[in-house]
Length: 174
Ligand code: CO
Picture 1 (cartoon, protein in one colour):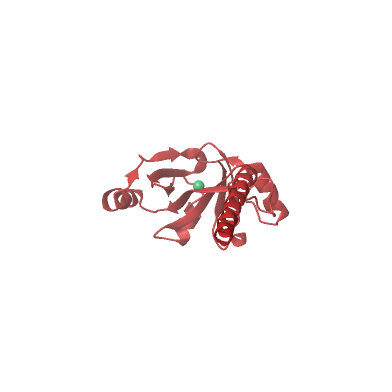
Picture 2: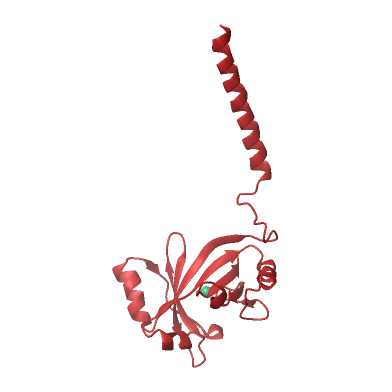
């Protein structure tokens, strides 16, 4: 009797211990642990990948007619010097950017990349001001002194590509 009871007892003890542990951890440990290096804010989802294109109708046609994506009508954003089309994907967006006006921030990019290319990636953060503070502390160059209102009406900050493996990174308030 006894030898067969022991394993069962041990099993019961360990599974109840496991339950206690998981209950405790789910109430204490955040969904995604905060990083030791920046405890004040959290990185979120990929909001969009921005693609600069010299030929907006051709790019729209590619995503809508060939790839079958849902695509927004073009929207002029004079304050940002771009016309933008949103390609809506299940998990994120592609933003097609085309220069608008003669001081477009993507004109230089298209001069260097004649057929277009990935201009930047945008990642959400839950506290943009705290995130910018961390960037400054870690010597990651920010492209503006202060956050600005981006194309989605939310504060954003762009980080220097030379500090981000060659990619222009936009942080956006979620
Ligand atoms: Co963007």
